[in-house]
Image 1 (cartoon, helix red, strand yellow):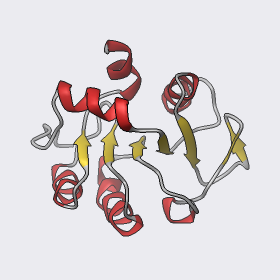
Image 2 (image 1 turned 60 degrees about the vertical axis):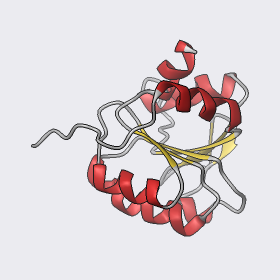
Image 3 (image 1 turned 90 degrees about the horizontal axis):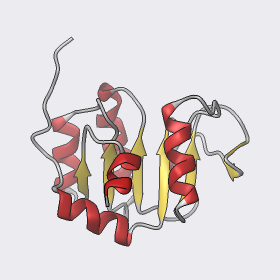
Image 4 (image 1 turned 45 degrees about the vertical axis):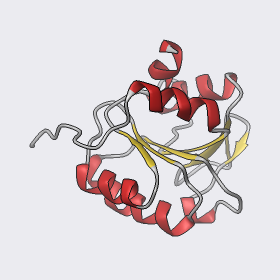
Length: 141
């Protein structure tokens, strides 16, 4: 397995701007298991006033929110996608974000880097964060 370093990434000032403007976050791969990172991060963000939109293949509700099977099924705009999926899934996720439109931020969590997908998202006008935990970054502000 080859490790990839992020060549497309927002800086600390852009990350601060992201958290000051984002209101609705679709969490792709949000597990119902409270021991999983995706659940802890989403619960933290929800507790800090962000609207969480769970994207998960099972369950009806997670963290008290309706679960959608895919980003395409969400019937309203989301500001940011927070991705807890393998790096090779990011190409399709970037395409889904572009197709949905109005998504401002493409965020791949700690350990997740796909520069090709990130560049595609950036070229479509999204801010991109890779290999960073949204909870840690928000706490650091």
